[in-house]
Length: 234
Image (tube, rainbow, N blue to C red):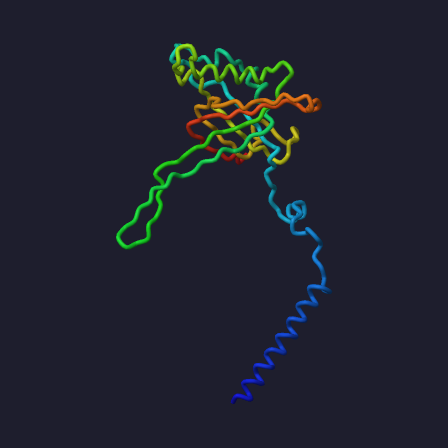
């Protein structure tokens, strides 16, 4: 039995060696896959039937305040910023993101069972956006003035909440931007609406002699209470 066992073992080793040599031969002399082939996005898209969303196809829109009367008896936001001013700001939004949200877990367990997490609430982050700034610094002054509406520096106390909050919408637009193929307000596929928005912080703007050919931009971080989303099936 030992001779048969040794013979079987030797045969297995020889067969394994032949198979290994075959694999090595395929690796060195076999047909090679084109370098980077699997990473080509255009090839992937051309071989699928679905259209993909483009990050550069978006619309950013700050609306007049929905609150017509604040603590002062008038709405300061609508009194200070006209629809034309808002249109200029919205048009020059350079970049933003779709907002995020996270569940706040509560861990529970029952007897000898494994513990589990249940949702006891949701946590919303802030929203940031970048804007091109015109030579007259209109965009910078706009957000300076809006931030001034949130807090009375002389009295050391906040202004009335409804005086300075408004709503904001961000749209993911369709793949085609050809006006001939779009009618009305059906150029978007998905939108989020952020409620009770106001600027939380304005990032510093760099002034630099070596950036003579650059365009000035500013970044603003907004606070909001919550958001919801909608799909456009038109």
